[in-house]
Length: 92
Length: 277
Image (tube, rainbow over all chains, first blue to last red; front, side, top):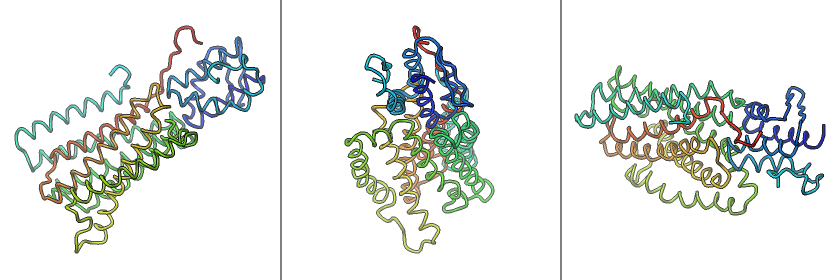
């Protein structure tokens, strides 16, 4: 899995701990994101940064800013490996 | 009612009917008898049925495997217990002809309900960002310390001085009544406290589709605090009767908690805005 896909896994996992299976159902609705949660695998087709932004947006629509903060925390170990312009806007 | 689900719409309609029933009792000066007992029984169905739906639907959020699932389950369990307490209360009303059975078997339902509401609110705090705020901000920690101190004195005044005439445990009480006399005001105080702290700490972080639902739930806990204090006041003064204004406030508090929790009884419908996805 590339870095963005790993990032998506971490974000979905962190949301799953809070909102349960709804986190996976919402992730499956994000265009460009293929989720195989039985194996905890995610693949991204198309523009990865935009897909991560969209993933965080669906969670934000449900619970607001806390969803963004939780996502940032979950992905913090991976965003450090990217240059500033490679980091998805929602995680800055 | 645009964003409310079918369960919320049904419970709102039912509460509206209860409100009409209460107004009819008020204007016809009914202060006892079967009509008043029916009001008590029927408003007890709000938490009983709403709580049952909430418990069954907690699985939507992962049941006991996620923070929100636990919150929905435990708040709902508290509602069911309260509803069972009210059903037992009605048994004393209709069958044993006791208008205000306290203490009685009804307290087996009423007393633990507060504990489960507090437990549910604690899990809710994780989903709303209250726990996050506590972890990240010194102001949040200070807020969590100051609010209990600010609430303690007025709460003691309201619950002991006003509602109980300055006597928390009257002389010659049974051990059970003594325990309940302490447990109810203390439990009510804790529920109010957690509602206030969680609401305050979440304010900056919590939003989205469920903001209003959680606000209703926490407001319901605050209303229950007021309603329980009024119940204590009227029973102390000997002016309590079934379907009095304190009971109407109880019905309102239970409706708000139930309405809030039922928002989580259906799967969320999130549509990405144009240009996203």
